[in-house]
Length: 223
Image: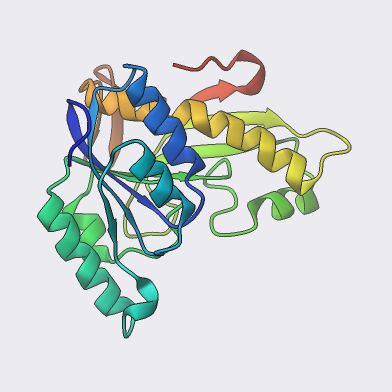
């Protein structure tokens, strides 16, 4: 079942699916010209699958634990996506490393969101690491996916100034609020043919971006 009209989109999740919910909400409010081909998870118990079903979106599970190794998982994932034939793939808390073959096949058509101001703090535990380092700013980055982990061309960043008494939990809550703004916005740009990737350069509204679009917490506005 495909929900909505517009750019055919598959969302990949592993857990609770809060970014997925923000994307669903924006689409149902008429703010995102996309259709959901499916929500796919590597975990049968992922709460985000129920979010998708509640919204009337079909779901697919490629259970990582049932696969002999990463190669088998990526082959099954590749096959499922080939069946779905998405125009856009959105990684929304998908916690598996995707094969080079898959990322190269969907280059320019696969997005990820990472909780840091890339290229700072790729990988895990970004909130802990930034607080230990003592940076003044933290945030989240939407980027195109490439074979290099968290290293694809950045599109947009949400920035928050770190408070003196900040904790990992308080910082995460503030950054995640911004993710629900910048991820739907990026998808909207792609669906409206305003954003694309050309020779590893991000183009928005006919202009090459020398740096990602910056959205500061105090000036953020939802779609």
